[in-house]
Length: 181
Image 1 (cartoon, helix red, strand yellow):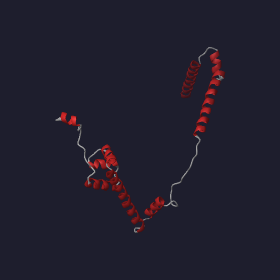
Image 2: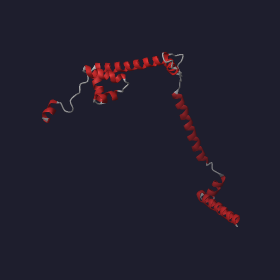
Image 3: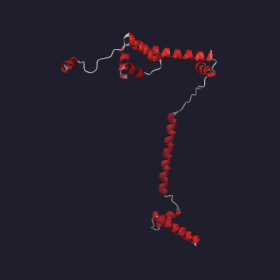
Image 4: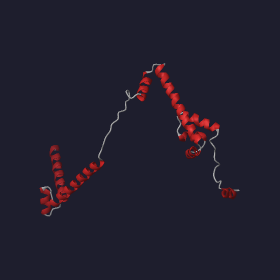
């Protein structure tokens, strides 16, 4: 039997048809509740990718989803208007006005014109300048006079730093003993 199915090209789960009137009504209802495509697919017992394929295949499925979204928006809009008008809810009034009127909007449009080519060019020039200065400083051997003298006298600067630290610790230890006694 399996060989026969493979030859016929019908391998895998059978397609679940979701373009029948009953299922389309359910899709509309789910869309009106604000469900996402993934949530609608799960409620129908199919995967998101299956829903996407069926939407592309059957226009009525896409229409049912859009109709559901519109119905959901209409329900919420009506409830908002009822709350604003009949209940005299100031929050509902403000929300409505801010989202439906340009005069009450919190949104501000800001237009920025940036010349990215110029900005990047200036940044690149500064990087090159810093690198050039670093090379110049290395070439001129701009060092602290004490470290320079130590190097020229054959004493390693790191050794000198460790010796200085040891001497400082010894002096601190001696001072602590004299303060105790």
